[in-house]
Length: 115
Length: 115
Image 1 (cartoon, rainbow over the protein chains, first blue to last red):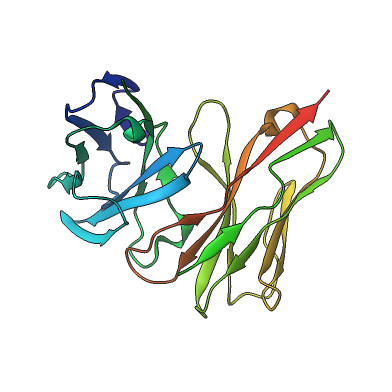
Image 2 (cartoon, each protein chain N blue to C red):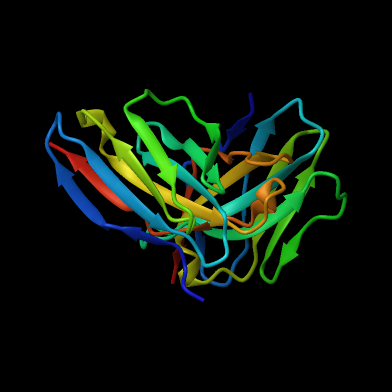
């Protein structure tokens, strides 16, 4: 069974640009969550999607957005990139709806560097 | 809001010995889950063990066990017979028992297993 696939693995962008990151969940998983990991702020929740609907959103500015497609694949977009957006972005999927019960499987992340 | 605190930024242990990682949390919720995740250099977050708050019995997974003290809001991880492959960053995490819940992570503890 394939795991959670995140692409690309590494990305370098310039301030002011926008970026789109992709996450393919485990087959059959309908919940996809995104987290930002930085040395200073640690792991912070961005948003969670279930069946193409955003169910939960973290405390990030509107420059951060996401969506989920009918095949459960998800993308997140960051517009007008800032240096502080440099981070590891992790995606997690779950096949269990009710509270996920920790059944989250994480991908290996996308390392975004903004220069 | 929930908070999770890991007071040990770094720990080291000799191979084959036992080590305990500490975690405390704060919440007003009655129903929730607690987790320990491991993040090796490969960056992928791997679930080590989970505990349902309503269960009094401490969870155990092979060499990994927890000491869950609900009244004290404490959730420590014990690793027995430490192996070199256990070297990783360990994160304690909290999640409410509702749909679409987010994981709230602690700051992490870098564990190094020495040969």
